[in-house]
Image (cartoon, rainbow, N blue to C red; front, side):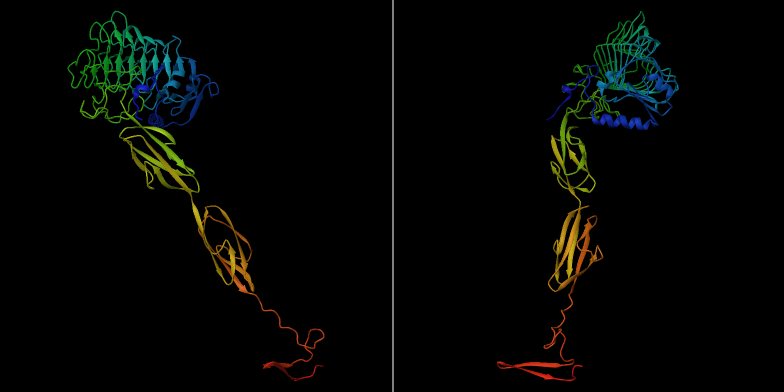
Length: 529
């Protein structure tokens, strides 16, 4: 069954759960930040307050904050730490992990010396009130700001964030406002700004500039900027001099430059009031759903330009050919933070003892993608073969998702052979021949001689005369049972002896038969003394 984004939720009661790819990417990014130690914050954590954890941390540490509301105004103090919620890829957790500034200052303040190794991820940042950066005051830091919900903050410059020169991505800036100044959401943030949604921010006062962004000099790409307002210039963007591409700039308002004012020429953008002189800009309604995803019929699907290595705001892969027709630069990149993807379901399962990746159950995969499936046997088991829409025993193997598919990894026990042979006359249990057992199994072998024979010894995997014997089948083994003839019984005693001894020593008895008569010739050689 194919699915699109129409059933997905969005942040602030707006977001769907993040997919596995986004989780993997985030974990890789955290690993790249060289985390040295972990500190937990919350009711059962190492600290109850975030600031106490920051004060105790050293550069390279990771602080993991449990969901709840923390009424704090925190300062990073120049430490290159990872400060995150328990799962930044889950918007429900980001909504529930709140840092509330209680209008007592900026919610988060950087010292300015932090590098890209410093990360702030997975929080709701609200109710900040500051001169610059009501939500986040960067002071020129290059920290990474990822997957946050920044809303309801106030300041005179950059109510959402100011002077943050690192990457700002996959976040929501909503209903932030400057009372007198510029940048309802961002001000003088010169790093890459990508995959964000700027909604309902405002620059108020007599000379409000940039309802969403003002004086940002970095690359601005794949954002949605909508319903922001400025009382003077640039309802969407003001004085942003860096590259502006793949953005949806729609329905912003200002007396001068409703969408842009004094900005670099945008390209590959969807703009509500004209092309603004840029190449490949479009002016058709972007057809966003309530969750800021692109609808299947959106003109923004496939209409952007390629950005190497960029996923969408939920971690979905880019690009995806959603139209089958040439648009934009032909790369099939979408305009905006969302990549419209048609999903197919790969259902995986196992038989026997082992695991499979992707894990058992339904796994969404972009239509047309090639998915690598890997089987990993448990101890003393081996991967045997695939069943379903994948056959053979190649491992790992690839599945092309041109439709919904099911794949089962079949595992079998590793076996060992025991070859039993016999020398002489006798038998064994199990009988002579080759037998197969699960690896690690114990086998008891017993030797039984034939009449007139005796069990002598074992040869091969075991040596000795103990019978029966027990073997552990950790390898293929051979065992030989050797039998020998028993000694003959003693001769019967001669006739005439009182005690079973011959009456005469040295008698030579010759018996012969002629016809029906038997004759016995006895020759006495020496009388008995």
